[in-house]
Image (cartoon, rainbow over all chains, first blue to last red; front, top):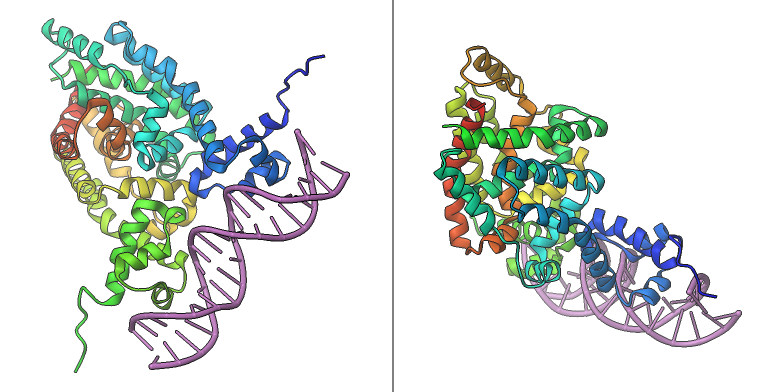
Length: 205
Length: 205
DNA sequence: GTCTATAACTCGATAGAC
DNA sequence: GTCTATCGAGTTATAGAC
């Protein structure tokens, strides 16, 4: 009789615990002991399942990113018109981060610690294709639908407005004095506010 | 004869070294040995001047923020008109980060690790006053100079666009394929591009 | 104040019983 | 597969000579 894999297998318990600890503390800050406690097992078992701390970390990292990027990338490189693509992108991105609020900081740290390793693991050699967006912006500018705009600056602006509030959440919460719940509502609003802000900037003078 | 304090006193050497190591590696990633090497002294002296690693770190943190915030805050809470305030804010902010490119990531990590401690040390109880900006936006909207806009969303947008590119620099560099020098030029451009992007969004439909 | 030497401790990893 | 016990490398911190 084949053993049915359950969500509470030891391996799953370890992964769940490791996800939590690595994502909140980073690689250097995480402790194997803490992961073991969180999983309700002992340190030795961690090494039995995943040879080393580094290997366990890499597992979490790759798994996390692969749950995050594909859909966002698909929207970004699609041929949806700008007025649909930008809202779709923001909405998908913000939803993913609302569901996994610690990932942005985690990723930002990895990006800065081991950039080449990181992108090799995530993109596997080929990077996101921005050429479609560039063509769209050119075309829209030619038709006078928007003013001419640097694609690079635009990409930076969109990503910044979507991601940064999550990375700096504790600061914004203290400046404007809001709870976690209110923060979530604010981010929900931003799924619409960011696109309309951007479209206004693109059309404006 | 009174000893003149020079920039190369042992204490200064330690602070310079600690700044570099802590800012690039964070508290957990930093090694006292590395700081000692960087300063050209031995580990014992670090403890002689600053009792512990934590104390040394706190010194760096507070010093860093106090070199960073006052001018930015002054602009933010000034009564400059919007068309001047926003460019001044972006310009000052980006200049500071160009001069200290690792600070944004450093700060973002501190914000997330010990938010209450952090803001107590930095703001000492009172937080930045956003009321002036709120009034300015209201007034401008009443005079039909800009469309009505949520101050909170606007503040998030401005800060995000200024800070996030520094935090995610390695990613942007790889996506658009640029060197450190080109990145710097891009950020110089943004000192103008962000304000014009924002003003266009504020005026637009 | 500055150094060398080393104590005290943290933490990842392994050995070996069950 | 899972546990207890422990090793050993790496680090912070201190003792004590100069």
